[in-house]
Image (tube, rainbow, N blue to C red; front, top):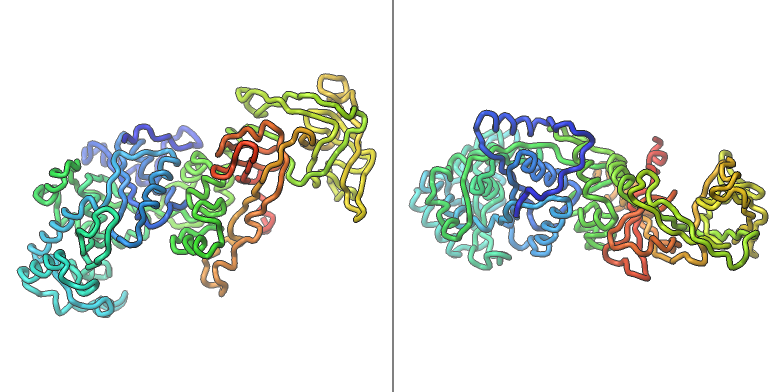
Length: 585
């Protein structure tokens, strides 16, 4: 698969990005250090991707595309038992949905034999040993940030004994956790990651790709560094939490030295797996942190498992599949990543910035429709009972290329209940008893009578239509303060409308300092379901087709539940930020 077909990220301008990572790459190309740029995106398939992953995807795939290189999708499947083929397919689908494709799909498990041979090389060079300490003892010997560690009593085992024990580990002779292979670096190092880190552990768990072939599995730092080297990755882009791991990354790459030892990676060539080992450079950048969000896989799984949400693709979730079902757009997500930028400074981005990016994309690309979600009947009394006409409405007020649509109009229409006030608040510009308002695309109506039920609730408004205010007539330009939308009661189609909002009602829901369980901050109003009434043209939507419902917000036909004759729409985002006022903004 070619990365060349990837969609170009949305941009604010034609300016060339000038962040520090791209500057490093430009310098490496100009100096001749690299002839081409190779990157990778290496998620662990133990969950679905979330909005935090979007930054890494856009950066790694985007940079490869910008510099005419390539980007691999590599599944870090070194932790069997926690990984699931369902997540693998989800990751692939989400990357493509964001607008990218990979040069090659790889798995860390593709390299298990090479990693094993590399570990043998380290043992032979006296740079790794088999340790019998228990996990608790390893922690005790490791020391602390202010106290140096101590050498394991097994650290000076002879090379021959280490080779024998490691091969027996490979043969499955020992119990889980009874032995580890550790790098021999420096137990007094200020960076704890260099205090003889584990390279392999015994774990007799069936692997989804290799079955029961391997009772030992490489640790992440070892597998990650050498997988990058095996694939010929030039720039290994990671988030800042891996900065302290970089010395170990460099140690593994340098001491195994795959480019100089083709015998180590010969099994790949024998299996027909293309490889061109290189010395990669790890570069760290800050994560994407959004307010009103959590990105912990453990906590996202808890939301699903304890039924706080309706699954991984619940539109309230900030998983990519949840955002997709909510109706967020790939272009809007890419625009967010561009606006946030690339730096080494950790910060929290207001969720309103994300919503604004989605609005900006949808304002340009979403056709308009009319819908009423809280209906109040309005009867035009000076039209005949059987009045039935068809009006022509533009599909987009800012782009005539969207064309027009037919909208039916009859004597009885639905309007939004909030567009009428019997006792109007100050500044109210919509319909009041005795007042006038423009009925969108129809003309000016005057409220002549208010009908109530036995509980004194307004159930119907009776209005007269000024015939001279119809389109094309002399009174059409007469000024009134308000314009309201409507749908014809005779022609409207009922739809299930799901009104989604932010899942949490505080900016930092997983802040452990407030003394409250993080789940107590779930917003009870994050999902409301109402029956709405739509103009007929809206009900012909395909799943995932997005519209602006005029004056209400942006909505999408649900990709799972929407059916012809049974429309289901999700609110993507409101027309304006409604949270600023709640936060006192």
